[in-house]
Image (cartoon, rainbow, N blue to C red; front, side):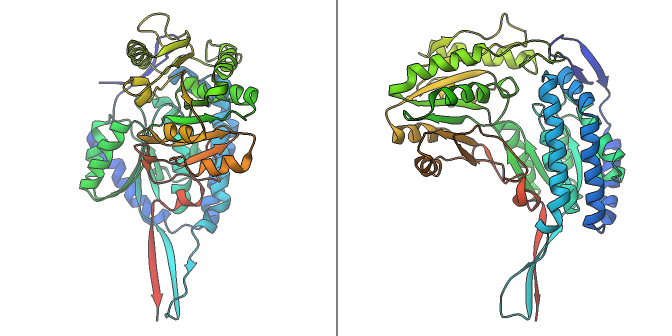
Length: 454
């Protein structure tokens, strides 16, 4: 079965690729394993020169990369360019800080000298999603390569051109070809790859079922995993919040990548006295977003990445409405089988409805009414997910105190949740485990070795 680039805006197949045979895949694993033996001995200065060059290429090729994202998964070119630049920032960050993050840590013991050394593991397999086809990969690849590991990328099957373009960037930057390779294979190859002793670890960003399957396969082989899975982020608006600013940011947070983001705000938990005003303001801001051709610079949101994703989101909304939810803003699909999905707002969302318990991966905002701040925290934590969240209040000290009570990997006070190289990123509960980015991210796939000198 071919791997296809299907343009979700036009419905046309842009390119087809023949999947790699298992023999070819296994040969690449062997090359990567041999390359690791040499790559791990290179200096941080040498790795940093190459990583800075990768950053330069990401900036130079931002228009080309943005076009690929637009035609493969519907991201507007303006957002695609921003994604490429963010990737460049991440490459520069780890080029500048990896040596410091990987430095030996002196520990005071009865020994003459004792310290923790951080040493690379070998091949890290990355199973990555389509929604941020460059950023998701770079935030694994930059720290992994700078740590002295090598990477194999099994990207989502609908973004093969993005996967190959990123491989070319690392190769053109001067990285030995076998240190980073894209594998054009289906998901059935992942377990087989994990059964190979030369593959030492796996990182996955994707759905909860995909994460469970990969974690189970890795567990059978006793291999380290990092999982960044779904999210249903709470956006808590207290009665004393700057309501106009909160509503405008809420609309932006729900519309990140046409709503197809793990950390897009999805559940808007609003204190009762301001809930009606908040809905009215958010509705105005959502209606102001311009849909259109992702290749048009004026477009603010494009289609969902595939028509079946829009069909599934429609089903979740319709089921929830049948179960008692109320539509505050009508949008959605114009007809089944189309990928464009206009923003919607649902209120009266309660336990037992699909909208209450499931992640809605698209531009549907869920309004939950809270009696007070304590009730807002209860609602925020009444979810199997725990990726991100935000708290909106004019009292910053109160916001920080409430942020500590939200069960999530990241909580922002009076700001939209986002990822950045400096801060760790990841979740709790069904949103996964382990961390990407920051000094924690580079240390996920290393042997933290104790060395004792008597």
